Image (cartoon, rainbow, N blue to C red; front, side, top):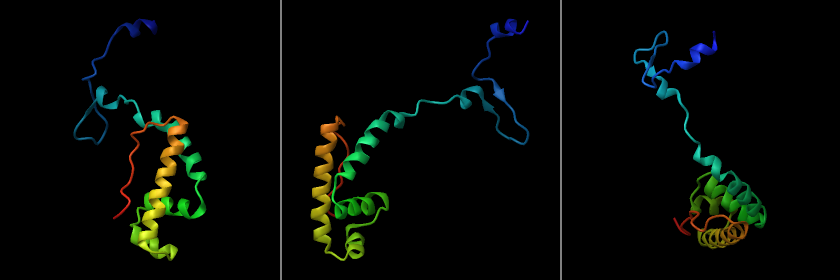
Amino acid sequence: MELGNAYETVSLDTKLSFEGETAPLTLNDSIGVDDTSLRKIDQYDDLKTAVECLDNREKMIIYLRFFHDLSQTEVAERLNISQMHVSRLQHKALKRLKELMSEAGAPASWPSASPSD
């Protein structure tokens, strides 16, 4: 008897009403979509491995610039070096990461950062 109900289809436009909601959702609103970032998970692992190949100062610059979103000037102040030196080290580190990523098979179109602010 329960399998007999499986033959009835329900439209994706069927309104779902929940207590206290003013605008009801439809079944279509509750269907998930593909998470495109999951396709990049191997690349993130390759990137992590590539970052580990950098020297400590380059790692710190990449970490502060791209994970803490600091400017080159702010990074220079924290590391007690000039902004120009940060720019050179960042450029060198990004070039090395790009080389390592291309060896690992990552797309050549990975975004790169501008060497200056």
